[in-house]
Length: 191
Image (tube, rainbow, N blue to C red; front, side, top):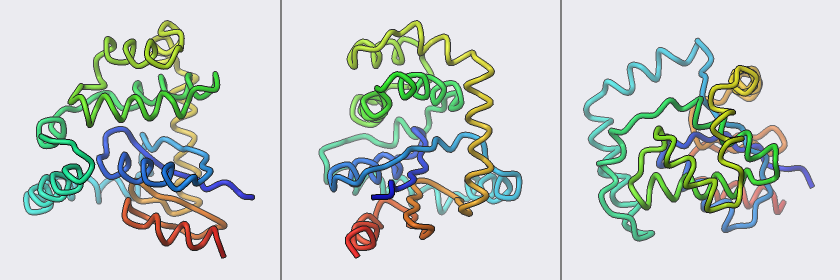
């Protein structure tokens, strides 16, 4: 069976919820971290991030959705920013060593359940310890141009599938955007 392509970013609460729901539905996924945006959609994100109405809704919506799974105080972590390519480079190093899903779920857990800032190398080290991965490999990857270039290469794939946000799931060429589209994705897989 064809794997679902899943575009994600640790920055997004919706990516966490979508990935979590997809995993709970046993959807077989191939992950693509979305760190570098194609230039044609960067302006859209810059304008959207400055929209106060959208930002206030985001806090309200995330607060509701996260309370459903037992997470409080989402608003605090939304203001914390990390060097996302570095964080995703650490994830890529774990993926290369067969621990990508473990790293991903622990990183999401640290960010959203524990309210930790993934921009701190101590948190990356803690993630590695919890999943049994050599932290030196992950920390080294964070400053490795080869990993950064791999992240940049995903921009071409984003363009190919017209990915404009996370989480985006692609199955047999059909796009499903958002954490609330897992049911439609599952229906498509079962067709």
